[in-house]
Length: 558
Image 1 (tube, rainbow, N blue to C red):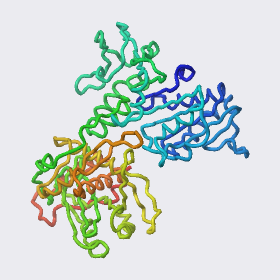
Image 2 (cartoon, rainbow, N blue to C red):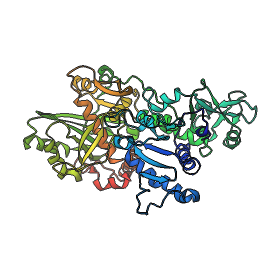
Image 3 (cartoon, one colour):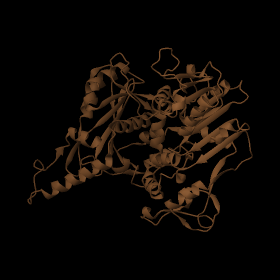
Image 4 (cartoon, one colour):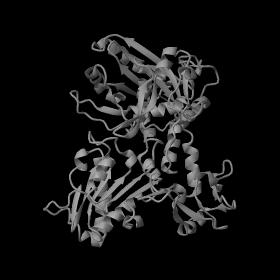
C-alpha cells in the first residue's frame, strides 16, 4: 500500500497464498483515493458476477461502515443514478467495477487507478478484444501518475499471468529475523519440519542456527521483518508471500493440510497454489498406451472389487453407435474400470436407446454382499443427436442421468451450473473438458494402488488404451498470451474412451460424494451383516445381498 504513493512505481504485483489480505489491500487503495486523492478507478474481477458480488459484499460494506466515505459516495437508494452496483461517483472521480469476461465493461472511460484481482482466473481474451489486463493498461495510458495493481494466487507455471508479472518486477520477499540468532531469512516450506506422524510437533527450523521456531515467535518476527527486492529495481514493485507468514495459520495446520493434499495430484496442486503461493509445474501431460495396458488386472464383475462404494458412467454418442463405460469408485478417488460397452445402431431410432437404458439399470454384485446400481450418468449432447440425448435424459433426471456438453479451454470448472435454454427444456451441464483431462492424466500417472490410482480389467482391449492416451497438452499463444491446449497426437485419432472417462468423472463430481464416509458405512454394514450371519451356510438365494437404498445417498451427500 505504501508503493501506491511512490511516484517512482507505476505497477504493483502481489503474488501470494489465499487469504493473505490482497483484496483488503485493494479496498484500502479504493478508500484512500475516494477520500484523499480522488481519481477515476477501475476494479476488474474474473467475471461480471464476481464484480457484482465484490460490490455488494465488500465495497458497499466498506463505504457504509466508514463515516468519511459514506459522506462522499451517494446513497444507492438515491434516484440520480450516481451510485449503482457497478458504477459509483464521488467528488473528483468515480469507481467502475468490471468483469474480465465482459469486453464492454473494459472499454470507454480513461482510468488512473486500475485494480486487477485474481488475474490468473481471467479468460485468455475479453471476447475478441484481447488480453483483459492489456486492455485495462491501455485505459490508463493518458495519466502520467497512473497505477496498475495486479493480485492473484498463481496457477500453472508457464501460463500464470501473475507469475509472469512478478518475474518482471523487483521481486520483493519478506525477510524476518530468527528470534535466537537474528539472521534474516525468507520463510520457505522446506524449513517446516516435524517428526514422522507427529504434525502437532511441527516447527520452523532457522536456516542459520537450526533453532526450532514456534508459532508463538511469529508475531515478533513479522513485526521486525522487512521487504527486500531480489531483482534490479524497476518501475514495477512485486511482492510474494506464502501462508507460513500468516499469524492466523499454525505450523501444525499447514502440515496437516499438506499431508491430506499430497494424497492426490490435483489437491497437491491446489495446496501449492493457495498455501505456498507458488505456480504448479506440470509434468509432461502425455502418456503412452503401453504404460497403462500393462497394468491390467484379473478382477471380476461378479462380484466387483470390495473397495468399490459407488458406480458412475460416461456415455458418448456417435452417428452409428453409443459407447459407455462404468467406473467403480473407492476411498480417496481410487477407481476401477468395470465395463466398456458399444451399442451399434442408429441413435435416431429408439431401439439403441432402449439397450442403453437397460444397461444403465444393471445391478452389480459386490464382494461384501451388496448389490450396487449405477448412481450417476453423464451423456454428451454436444456432438451428435443432441435432441435424442435431451429426450432420453430429461425423464431420467431423477435417476441422475444428466445431459452434458463439453466446453474446451483452460480454467473452466469441471462441472458448471446447468441451463435449460434448449428446445427440450432439459437441464444441461457444461463440462470443463480440459480441466477433466488434466485431472484424469494426473491420476493415470499414479503408479501404485492407493489414492487416485486407476485400475483396469483384463477385458479392456488395446484400442481402449490407444483412445485413452490419444491426446497431449501443448502450449500455444493467443494475442501473445501463452495457454495450454489438449490436442490429438495424430490426425484422425479416436478419443472416445478419453472423453467418456472424463464424463464419468464429471458424473461423480455432480454427486459431491463423500467417498471415504461412504466407505466407512459400507465397512460398518458389512461387519454388522457378518455378525448377524447364521451359523449354517445359507443358500445363494438366502444370502444377504441387497440393493443399496438410493435414498441413502442424501444422507452422505451432504
